[in-house]
Image 1 (cartoon, rainbow, N blue to C red):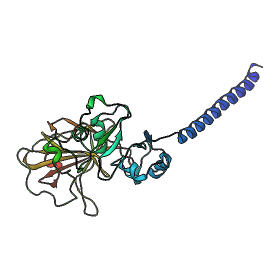
Image 2: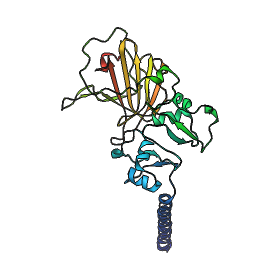
Image 3: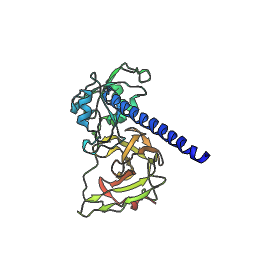
Image 4: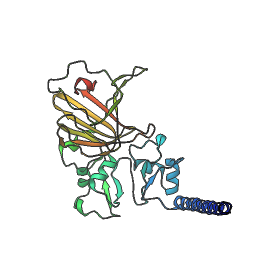
Length: 302
């Protein structure tokens, strides 16, 4: 009798659990609808499956061009689920030549704003005379001068033209200088996904290194950071110039830890490696150049 009586109790328990589960699902749907209707202007939005920049711009009631300019380095054709997009407010502006009008959000500093827009904190400070960087207020609107904008410059470093990784060209043929010997690899733990060399179409490709979540790329030698910012389709990028006309490039990062003009030593953290939306891996694109010409990093690294 005890066993027979247990069956109704089990059914009742299953029905109760099923009811709770359905109620929970209904609550999630309701929450989802409420979130989709909530105002998003001024906030960071996490990309969900099916999202497009055009749809986000319409929800925020802002021009698509403004949304794109407030997210430099974001490829509208390659949005990844979980990727974060900054949605500007009606008070913020993004003229093509700059300077931008940017509204301070909680946790913002000149450095963090500069990293997002691919500029420098010194350039922002020069564009906001009289404003102390340590006294920023949430909701305050500041000017964000961008590279090439006609704004005051604070150093000779800031007046240099913004460097760009050169298009694949003829590789360096001369031997590396004596100063470039036994340099460390840019990652403590890594796996070579793609070696430096030409692909099936004959296009020269830089080295690609896979690593783990939270990994930071470090400088392979002493030098000066000539560029630290975002580049289209390359994410956040750091370019370091070394002695004897050598350069090292660290791309596909998602957070920079240095600024242009800074002197760095071998082993200095430069950036945190980002997660690639298509592969799901944490990949660092690493490039070495001699006199502006690409070279095989294995000729220099130990």
